[in-house]
Length: 481
Image 1 (cartoon, rainbow, N blue to C red):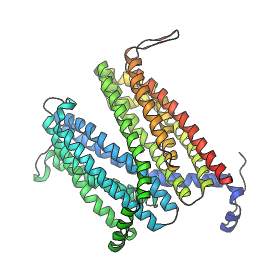
Image 2: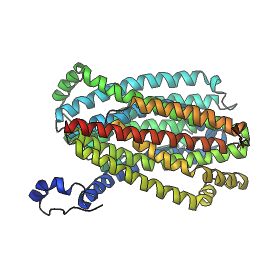
Image 3: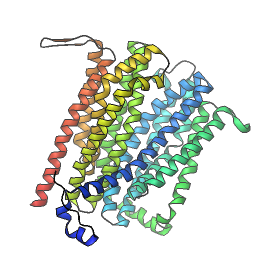
């Protein structure tokens, strides 16, 4: 690539935009923007994950039964919660396009619509969680944990309206250039959550000893405290009460905008549901191959899930920045930034893969001291390394396509291939092997799931890259015409 000359002063930069667009200075500008937004998003996401890590560590020291109960309750609760979060993730693109247009009133109208939909989702999710808590026999929970699981879920369900409302305001803050404030509040929330969990799980400072239920109550208290604090910290940007009433009226009247949000949000929610359901199914099926393989599978799944937040945070930042350009009508710059984002994503995925391959034995050792489980986890990491690369590509592709309001096709392709390939094909390859046209592969046990998950991710990634290329080329042709 030949780098065009970059004008030094602002006026010259405006005159020379076309000449400088493919230049090194513009690429560095994009990179600085992405890193400036992606790092706070990543740290904020890791702080949110840290809440579960804190509870797991504390309950691991409190009692085996409470730890087992929490793991069951979280598995059920997270399936419901992930659908809500998947929907609200899609709001980032809607908010970012409104922000990019420069119309502050329009932005707050869609924020209020997001709040309405989040509260509706919270009510439905609470009903779902309470129903699951009342029908635990469906999930075949470990004997002796049923009452603890039900209590944990009922308490945690109370936090749903608070958590989803906070998520809407967090999305607004991130697209408005306040990602560092979101990061600071999430890190503060993690510290508060750890302190409250310590008090309530173990019954410190004269408080009752509640075990797993104490961990759930700590989550509710943290959400109840952090939401008003977050709103108070950003009060300068909030509309007045009189203006909010007007925004509420406009939000209810703007049916076209509500339909646009649903058109983006529902496929995103469905994709998250299928994603969580598919990998939960793989974990359940892996249990058929014995404790060693199931344990190793859980280690690799957990580590991949943690690592996933790195490309996911990058994808969130890139899609916000692309949506800013789309909202501002700078479509050519949006296309250019989308392709640059894919290149950065590929480099990050490559670094991740190399690091995981080099450190796979150390990674397994951090999770377990059981030599058999550790050795098989090393084998699975060696099998699944390519899955990390394609999974990183997938999250970027889905986010960028969502920026261009393309959601239905990615959902259908991803869900269909994941369920048939990774789950169905993985089970066949794991339990029966493969005999096809002279090719004979012996049953691969748990390795079969990761082989098929990798193949499925590769297929979907290639299809979505082609879909993005077609969409951007069509936009360019229509712009020229």
